[in-house]
Amino acid sequence: MTTTRFRRGDSAFGDDVTSPYVPIGVTPKYPPPRRNIDPDQSKTWLVRVRPIALAHKWVFGASLVISFIGLVFQVQIPKVVGEAID
Image 1 (tube, rainbow, N blue to C red):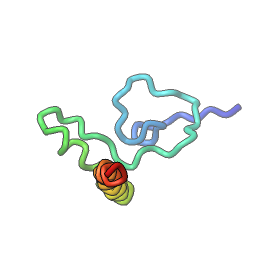
Image 2: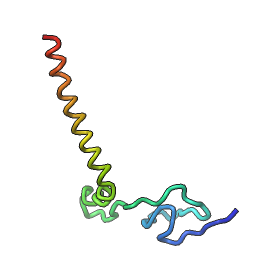
Image 3: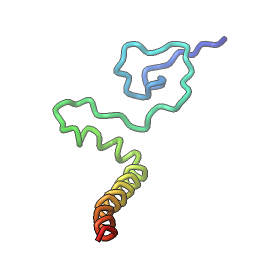
Image 4: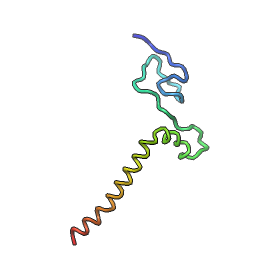
């Protein structure tokens, strides 16, 4: 059994290692995240999360479009039911 020792920027948790409990000898199953939340508490939550949204902009945009389409269907259901009753 081989053990792998991670350097600070080469860990299973990506570049942002905020936990002092970094596993030693553990090979990560998944790659580190592309972006991390900015740890600066003086910024607003939206500014802090922006790097994650920009790293996954296609998924973020697609989820917004699909949510809007679902909202349109939810608004139309009472109208269709009302016409069916009348």
